[in-house]
Image (cartoon, rainbow, N blue to C red; front, side, top):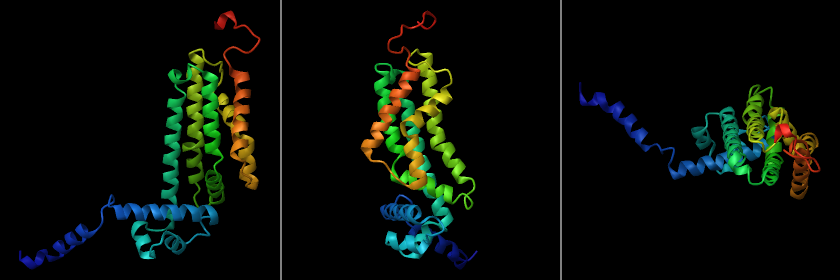
Length: 239
């Protein structure tokens, strides 16, 4: 085989070597700029109302650079949703640790109040409301994405709450007969009314309102599921 036969291979190798690696700081900065610009535009204008040209301009990039990183708008949108889902899953894992028996045992109600406040603030963030509205609005374009979001985001949070309440009940720290129902009640009590209003008419409550609702919701939850209720002696069968 002559030396000239290897020239195409050597040229391809040189081109590959010249391509920036995924962990190259320039690539990291470019992807971060694209994500921020695309997320903002998708949430403000919807999927259909946003173009790749607009995303490139908002990110300070050429359209060619944008397409080099993301093949098309569909791929970019699904990647952004995947990034959000990964964040929510980490949040749910944090709930598992925060509601472990060892963590909760010293002061059950105080821990539930802290969890309720943090969860309510997370649920009622403007960008979360906008994302939910966006997924509902684009359900025909992405028929499975809204279902996946519910399963991996609010669904995962509800499963984490249910598991925690079941464990706390077994340890005698709560009185929970149906952990799944208790989890749904907890979530609605701390933020449900505000969430419904925000989804329908886009009215986002203040942080003070969110925290007050969460505390009152936990108080109602506590009155139903506390191990011993005020003014009552524990039953001998549960002692």
